[in-house]
Image (tube, rainbow, N blue to C red; front, side, top):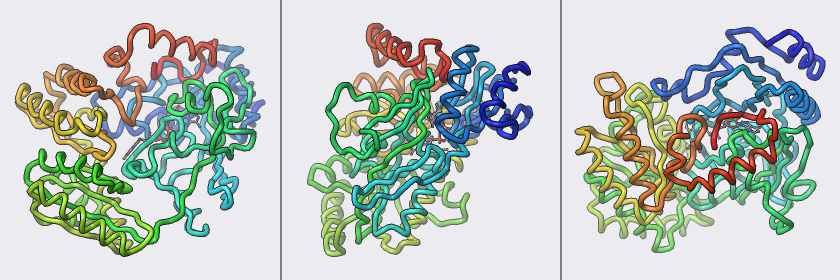
Length: 465
Ligand SMILES: Cc1cc2nc3c(=O)[nH]c(=O)nc-3n(C[C@H](O)[C@H](O)[C@H](O)COP(=O)(O)OP(=O)(O)OC[C@H]3O[C@@H](n4cnc5c(N)ncnc54)[C@H](O)[C@@H]3O)c2cc1C
């Protein structure tokens, strides 16, 4: 970055908040994709500058300046993205939101929490411990993820079956447009449950992967904390049985908080890696069913019904964890799978299919495994039809069939009315597969929308669509 640019940025945020140190710039240029998918993650282009803004006004000034000079800007949350969403592929202003980390209010009457962009999921969990029994259900695996990043990625995670994903939790947002205007969505104070005035640009911003605006504030829906919580683990010896049990549970009116699918090797490695023990003694494939009910009686009744329903699918063991520490251990182990096994696989497409097609997808996946003479372990947010299919390394290296198998994994999902990504977005890693999902005209409309928001293409240019 040339000196004049640095000086201009310093004039906006102060000298202390502009950083060109190559080592720190590199660490702000890497994200979880580099840790977990190192064989496919792009190397960041060097030469970017980190800028840490204090508020929306400073962000507006940075974006106006970047527009004038046509410099790419990448909004940076916690860097836990998994599709090369934040990695610079050109010299960029890395706009870190980290100074904007205040919880603005917990509005108990309106049951919402309003936070600046850099408040993390962990901060929210902590803050709500002192509320009047309110809680935020969503739990994408890394509690360091920030609300701005979670909104920009439309994050999901394990606890999305009952209340939905990020898009269903956001009541309002403050956003700085790429051209520098500050706008408010969801009413001027972001507290509306309904708003039918005009096009819903807030929903367009959610999941836009930092390409349409910089999110500076988010209002999140809160829910009354359920009094009775329990986690069931049902073990199976055949993964088809585990998958077949999923729609059977849901169609009988049981809506758990989470309905996850995991396999023995991965879950045991994750447990060992954090010094815990996976509680199930038997079985190769597991459903983790997190229940949250108003009363303890309901919890036991639903637990008994799940026992009855899953009995039709040849379970070999069923466990119930009721204490807070047992339940937390299971969630922690589940959340740790990805880092624990990152040296074993190359990539993990997060395809999603209609929930009723889970078993059909699994059958297709078995054919793919046979075609390439490999195994593809699966970790799934099964209750959402969202599968993370692991493409394993071959003797420590990227397998020769890597591109072909990846394409088959995506195409099979799309063929059954599914999508190439249910959570991790397009970023840089999944761009080649977008035409599987959309016609030329549909992609062109998306590009035109980008152009309306960002006529000079300065915000996370070249990522997502
Ligand atoms: C171990 C692990 C488990 C995970 N599990 C899940 C999971 O279960 N479900 C799931 O959905 N995701 C999961 N993720 C992915 C990741 O946590 C989410 O995508 C998260 O929402 C990213 O938040 P972040 O703050 O880290 O954003 P970053 O990684 O910093 O940024 C992600 C994208 O959002 C943009 N962005 C960031 N902040 C802003 C902002 N304020 N305004 C505009 N754009 C912004 C960036 O430019 C980038 O394009 C997991 C990641 C890890 C490492």
